Image 1 (tube, rainbow, N blue to C red):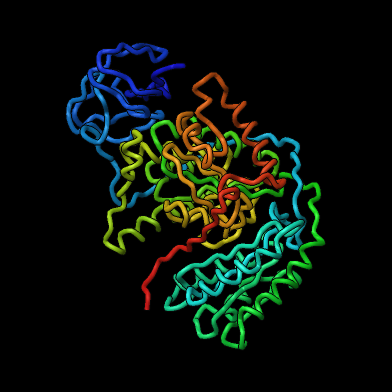
Image 2 (cartoon, helix red, strand yellow):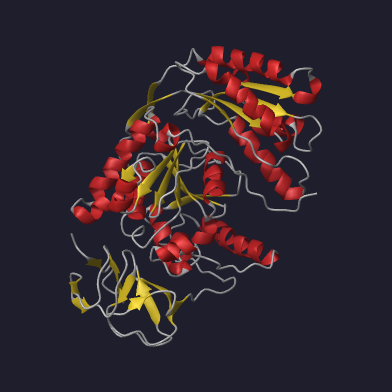
Length: 493
């Protein structure tokens, strides 16, 4: 196993693939460096003397500037490296016109839906319209577990604190999110559970659901019935009876929408996990399927790479708005735009937002950007899409499901157990994490450092996705972890 990797020939730093000790002389392929201090796994070392104020290059791009003289062999991190990012920017389109040869679509066993996009699960969902009925939804879901079995693959409630005391676009986003989940293909049956006096009730959400399959959705306003629990159980039994007729049938991978997300990243994430997901994304989009990249604040510093891959100038303009609108959102609350990376990211070796973003965006592979979506907007374009949502793991993953993702690929270097409303596969950046947290991790991309090729791991990840789409449970499902987090953007009355 190599001990140090220089990602691009022009990089001024290399990354430790294991903990290294001061005094060791380490080869990095095109040269060698003697360490002047200990270097934790995932952290960077200077490959030559770097002047104060000089841009530090990693992934072939600047990840910040040196705040002091950095001698060769020295640890490069937050104590001597600072971001170059500041404020909103003006952008120019320099299209790279990425080309992609189509390949035959693989298949999986899914559930056909009236909407045209198959589900990869056939679950019974209870969706509250307002936080006031969360406990009611929980109690109903607990009682309704007796309905699970056979083609009814699970019964889940998705509580949230919103649905009332919201205004304007914030309220509209909650309504769109709930309407999208109520018509999600992974739900074979849905009970939309309202209170009756909220300002985002069933009367407001139902029109946003479009031409939905009425045989699969029921509505209940708790204030309108004497015993909401009894009434809900009757409706759920009707839905379950309908769902028992459902059978998995062969479906093309061109009907898959897969969300791309990362969290708890470390210095190896951009070397192993995110490039592996990028290979998968290119494979799926070449088959005619769709992927969605989100967490806009973690594109800052690498956004021009995505902009130049936009298929049209119109998409470039939408991507510029995607980036600058999120910066304006931060500024409207008088918050710093570049308050990133997190403490866990820094402990894992990520120093600046540019460092994080250049690793994060590799999940998108190399294909053209064919869609740019606002929060709550459904995917309509085949290929790679960009989605407006924050970096928060639960909020961003829920946003991907709301836009139609049947499954999420989630890369991590530190580890996380959560799941969103759809299967959430965890891709570890390193073998120690994969071995330590076997109950959390679905796929070990750290094997790239142990002799496996990127193409092999990308194909293996595709096979895991197809198996998961065919019913194999993700770790979060085995653990019973399903969460919903709506993006809150405005005042609360």
